[in-house]
Every structure is written in C-alpha cells, then in structure tokens.
Amino acid sequence: MADAPLLEVEDLHVDFRVRRGLFGAASYTVHAVAGVSFRIERGETLGIVGESGSGKSTLGRALLRLVDATRGSIRLGGQEVGELRGRMLDFRRDLQVIFQDPQASLNPSMVVADIVGEPLTIHFGLRGRERDARVADLLERVGLATYHLERYPSEFSGGQRQRIAVARALALEPRLIVCDEPVSALDVSTQSQAINLLEELQESFGIAYLFIAHDLAVVRHISHRVGVMYLGRIVELGPVDRVHDRPAHPYTQMLLAAAPVTDVATQRQRKAIRRRLPATELPSPIDPPTGCPFHTRCAHAMDICRREMPETSSIDGGGWVACHLQSVGPRLAGAPLDRMVADRSA
Ligand code: SF4
Image 1 (cartoon, rainbow, N blue to C red):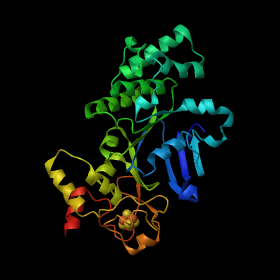
Image 2 (image 1 turned 45 degrees about the horizontal axis):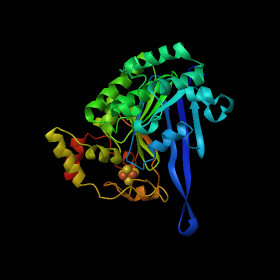
Image 3 (image 1 turned 45 degrees about the vertical axis):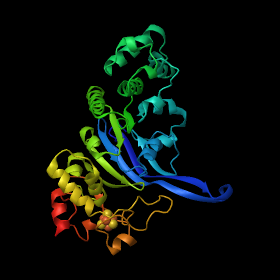
Image 4 (image 1 turned 180 degrees about the vertical axis):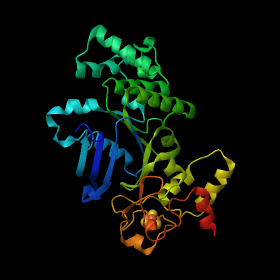
C-alpha cells in the first residue's frame, strides 16, 4: 500500500435525521454530503470551497470521524478507516484538525505547555523535561516563544491562538491536517501570516492539508487543487489556477463573481456577472432539486438540467466538471470570466 494515495474518498454520503413539528412528530433526512469522491496525495493541499450549508465542514468532520458516514469509503494510506477499530490512536495521530475558532477549540483552563504537551503524553508517553523541550521546539516552529508556555489562551491574540492550535496539531506528526476555515476569523494580514506558516510547515514536514474555506481567493494561495462543493456534492475539481482563471461550472463562476477584488476592471466584470445571476437562495438539503442541484440558480439551466444529474467531464487545463454545458452547450464552460461577461451580454 506504499504507493496508495494518502487519502482516498469514494462516494461518501452523510445523512442526518432531523425532527420537526409539534413534539418532533415529523422527521426528515438532511443529505449533508451526497456522494463525494476525491484523493489527496502526500504533501498536497486540496482546497474545498462552497457557501455555508454546502456540506464542506460536514465532509471534514466525516473524514475525522467526528460524524458517521452513512455510506461510502474513506481510505488513509490504502487502509479503510472504518476497519481501524483497534488502531484508532494511530488514526488520530495521522489525521489532525485545525478549527476556525481557536478560542473555542483550546481549553481556556489549560496553559499552552499543557495544551500542546497533552497529546505528546497520550500518544508518545513523553513527560517532564523531554516533553517540555518538545513543546518549546513546536512553539518555536510556529513563531511563538518559550515565555508563552505558562500563559492561557485568553492572553493571546486570535492569530497567536491559531498558532497554538497549529502547534498542537503538529505535535503528533500527522500525515494530513483538516483545516476547517482556519483563517476566517482572522484579519487579512494575520490570515496571510497563518497561510504562510502552514505552507512553510508543509515544506518542512511534507504534511498534506484538506483546506476548507468559503473564499476561493484564500484557497488559491495555499492549494494545489481545489474542489467546489454545492449542496453536498463536488461540482468542479481541478488545479487551483485553472479553476480560478477558467472556472467551468456556473456555480464556481458565481462564487468568483461574488468575491471582493481590488482591481477596478475586474470589479466591473464581476458586477456585470452578478447582475445576470438569478437572486435565489441555496435550496434545502432536505429536499434538493431534481437533476442538477444548481438548476434553480443557474443562468444557463436547460430542460435536461431539471431532469438529469450531469456526469463529470474532463476540462482542458486539468480536472473535471459536472455540468450538462460540457455535452450540450460547451460554449461557456471553461471560459475566463471576461469572456463569460461578453458572451452573456451578447
Ligand atoms: Fe447549470 Fe445545467 Fe450546468 Fe447545472 S447542469 S450548472 S443547471 S447548465
């Protein structure tokens, strides 16, 4: 299994039962993740983007086994994680997580030395001076100093708290870290410092990341490839520059059109795209639309889109897209944003 991908996810589904109505009389199924497949190689970063409610965080939690998958397969280094029953400590060591809100994910009553040191004791049996030395080394790696060791999380800024969370994740020498919106709560300059840190650590240790975010621009800086999620499915996946510069799926185009940019010409292009987009909300994952799940919001929706789920098609420049435009009307698919505006204005 040495040449197996680091992580291989196949047809993953996560459903939740929710109760509603008087005394919870009615129950519904929320299809939070609805058939997701992808791979991550060693030392690679796969970005996952989508609106809130797209299922991207549930996907991350299913990989970490914080929620149960309804069906599908998750293999880490070729080993099915559902079959690791006696080796869950190894699994926890290989797969770590950094959450969006370090304030909530760090125990407020523990000092940094214990927050970072506790996993070293549990997993490696390190104690005393040996543990202290390892913690000090980890803090240095993430740009903190030894005088921070005896401080509590409340004594740090948001960016520093996220560094503590990174040090704790690194302590176990993981092969993969699920980063769930790790920079969303930080200001812009602290965001870029945190992303630079993650990139440096990847270079030093060969760690892979699944980097979940709602902002394609943030993902672009750190990812090698990116998958775009909509209503529990990945609708486009490919090299990050291709997806950013030549988005093939109308939903990816919509996400990009909504992203803030500083360049005036690009602002005008994106405003023109936004004006042509139907102003509808994300449909409910309890009762997703038939056919292509994006058809209720898509400016290019055709009859076939309302009836049939699109298959995936390869895209020039790498990756794939799930959209009927590829087979029925490929004129707009894979178009750069400026051509989309021109075509839609015609
Ligand atoms: Fe739009 Fe149809 Fe493509 Fe779905 S399949 S994104 S509705 S064009």
